Structures are given as C-alpha cells and as structure tokens.
Length: 335
Ligand SMILES: CC(C)(COP(=O)(O)OP(=O)(O)OC[C@H]1O[C@@H](n2cnc3c(N)ncnc32)[C@H](O)[C@@H]1OP(=O)(O)O)[C@@H](O)C(=O)NCCC(=O)NCCS
Image 1 (tube, rainbow, N blue to C red):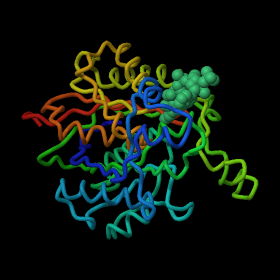
Image 2: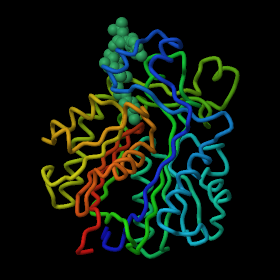
Image 3: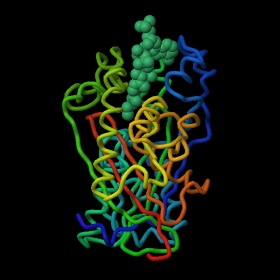
Image 4: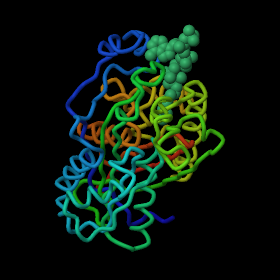
C-alpha cells in the first residue's frame, strides 16, 4: 500500500475520572501493591462511571480530535471504532458515536481486534483514504474493560482500565501531523483460546449457566500470553521498521501496547533501545486495550516527547492473537 497521501492530523484521548489504585485492590482480592507493581508496573487505572458506555468515551476522545484538526463532524466520511466492549451487540458502537457527534455524512462501523484495535482501525482507514473512497476518517478506539473484568479473579482484574483515543486520518496535511510510513497487521490463531470472553456470544448465549460460571468475563492464560507478546511484539517491530526502511536506532519514540512493563522492557532490550526512546504510561492507566497506544501517543505529544521529523514506532498485541506494527513520521519542514 502506498501511504503517500495518508496523514494523521490529530490524536487525542479521554479517560474517565474515577481512579482504582493498587491499594483499592488490596481490599477487593488477595493481592498487594508490591505484587502488582513488580509483576506488571501498574499503580492505578481509570474506571468509567455507571452512566458511561463505550460510545461515550469514544465521543469524548473524538470531539477533542475534531477540535484539534478544526474539522466539523459533517465533513467526516468514515467513523471506525475499534472495540470489543461495544454498548450493545447491535448496532455497532460506531453508529452511536456517529449519532452523538452528528456526523451525518459518514459510514460508521466497528472493528474488533482486541488490544490491537487502534492500529487495525488505522489500517482500514488508511486503505479507504489511499484508495480515495473518502477524504476524512475518524479512527477511534475505546473499551470499558471494567464491565468485562472479573473482580473475583486476582490474576486478571488488576491489569485492566478504561479509556478511549481518537485520530483523524486524511489526505490533507495541516499544522500538526504524522505521515504514515508503514503499517502491518497479522493474526496468529494458535492462541485463540488463551485470551477470551467465552460467554454472551452465539456459541454460549447469555443464560443463568453462563452467568453462574462467570463466562461473561475475560479469561486469560497470563504466562502464555506473556511469552507470545514478547516474541510477537519484537518480530512485528522489526517488520514495521523493515517496511519503513529504517532501523531501531532511527526511532525517535517507541510507543508499545501498555500491557505489562516487563513485556515492554524485554522488547525494548531486544530492539536495543534506550529507556528514553520508550513511552510508558502504564502505571497510571493499566491496560486500556484498543485505546492504549493512542492514549500513549497523545500524551507523549503533549509532553513534547515527539519532535518534528521523528519516527514513531507503535506495536500492539492482543487476544486472537492480533499483532500490529506501524511507523509514523512527524511532519518536518520538508513536508
Ligand atoms: C498476568 C501476569 C502479570 C502474571 O504474572 P506472572 O509473573 O506470570 O505470575 P503467575 O501467573 O506465574 O503467578 C505467580 C503467582 O502469583 C499469584 N498471583 C496471580 N495474580 C496475583 C495477584 N494479583 N496478586 C498476588 N498474587 C497473584 C498466582 O496465583 C501465582 O501463585 P502460585 O505460585 O501460588 O500459584 C503476567 O503473566 C502477564 O502480564 N501476562 C500477560 C498478560 C497480558 O498482557 N494480557 C493482556 C493482553 S492484551
């Protein structure tokens, strides 16, 4: 795919106000702040209010992206929302976002690619823009994992938080922006049963049995997911860099999926990157699934961690197993 005309002209995020700390978890399950910190790097996460659904988080992030790019909702051709916790099974949560934003001209649909969702959404949007099926796509990623987290399972409940991110993808470069240099997605089905929500779909529809067995919550084999993540993220980082024609040393900032600080550390060492080259906000948000890399990139920009002309490497993994890698280049004086 030739991404010559594909620009990301805004990136923003929204996280709910309520904070759930490791100390809070000490009162919920048999755990300690030091176990969670040492094994995951997480200190706290954000939790959606009872009256917030996934589309509300996405709308809040989306409005900020539109403001940043000075684009009105009516100009949007596509609304693509990456999520596996939609408001309801039908319609797609993207349709609710469209309605709430008043983006009346757009085609709206969801993408389900677990924690890689933002980059999968970006991939779909880039294809639509590069093939000139439209000019402006709002790519959103939002999940309310607290609604599918089993707060009786200490092996999983400490990991996840809620949040949303949004990016405006378009042909036109405006004041701020990234050029998409490479973007690759792939799925490895061998791990399909290692990270799942087994109940509530067509295989095991909601019933008193699925409720009693707690099948509507995330089930995970943490050790196997961990091993896959380290290998998969490294391979995908190298592949995205290869496609971009650059090497790890050329990266201005590495923005990995924020799942576990030990995973990020291992991948960083394998890539030969310094700590300064990696952005981590995991201690404050935990794993926000599809939104994680978008939130991280938006925060990194606001903290001036990305300079004009920098290459940014983003790599994700998630249930499926999904993998994605992208190289972006911050606009410089030649663009
Ligand atoms: C989940 C994860 C943090 C567990 O860390 P780990 O070092 O592999 O720990 P283990 O699962 O081997 O468990 C070690 C011990 O800690 C215990 N333990 C698990 N969760 C605990 C918690 N929250 N608090 C205290 N002890 C805990 C286990 O029961 C086990 O005890 P045992 O030895 O008596 O059986 C780690 O495997 C991980 O991060 N995996 C990847 C998960 C991920 O990223 N998922 C999202 C993908 S997008």
